[in-house]
Length: 239
Image (cartoon, rainbow, N blue to C red; front, side, top):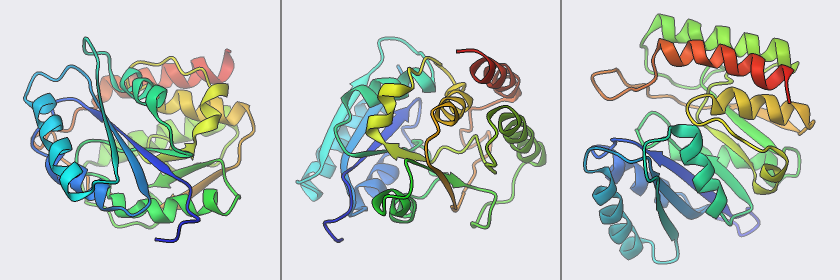
């Protein structure tokens, strides 16, 4: 890979993902533009934490130049709090969020980072709804995402197609202006509302999406959708 790409930190929040961690972390490490992987365990109750250290040892053998950090919450706090812990220790020019399951493909990093590398974007969203390959799954999840994105757009005056996407890539320095506070899945509407308020250059690109079922470990529920409506209103209308 050309050395003109900015350095990239991948933040991986982990909660009970022991079955997918090894494959996921290897796929992330294979990306030639990744310089740092930060795994943050949200007090998992399975063997995720020990699996994280096992993966770290294997990756350092195969990818000795890669920087790998492991952090742990003292109690279960949620995705937003887990991401903040990762953001605090990240050192690369650019950050991307990577869920610990296998729903998103790290091969997309090179495509997503290009607008940032070219000096055109501060933030890039990977959209599941504008042309990428996706697994056919739940209709009401699809509609829920559409409704939440529409509501977010109405308040933020953006024209995103996928506000709830995991793949949010951004220049690390913008974090100093955001003051993120959400602990759970409210991170998605909060991040979107706050980047809209400070007039950053936002791009959206299509990505592949390999969604999983609840039997396969999917965690988000309708309650998180209802909470997202509250967070959209809260973070768009109030400081």
